[in-house]
Image (cartoon, rainbow, N blue to C red):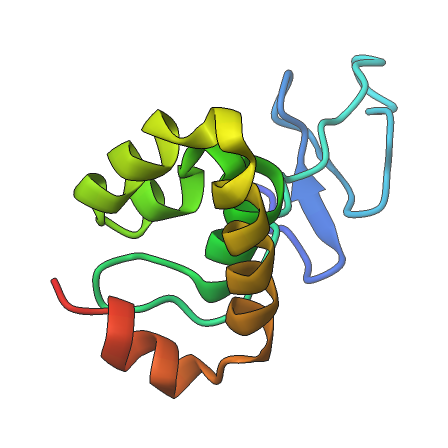
Length: 117
């Protein structure tokens, strides 16, 4: 007698190791609830240096007034300038414009401008 063979529509219980249906929420052998595999949020293509255009746009929208997107994109000097002048709300206005530009920018242009390692 060999080990039981798992079929394509089956999985192993995370607690007792019994073979159960892949869609099962609770193992019929031990009664333990099965954890679903984590799903990743895909924001689109990533530049060679690991930066993402959509993530940069979200940083510009939510943290642009204090230079969050500039720090994310590796432009530390500009991020500090945004941080120093955040009380004037001028960086927030500029960041909103950059948010729109980042959303409308192609992935290739983003990689050329911000994708260097």
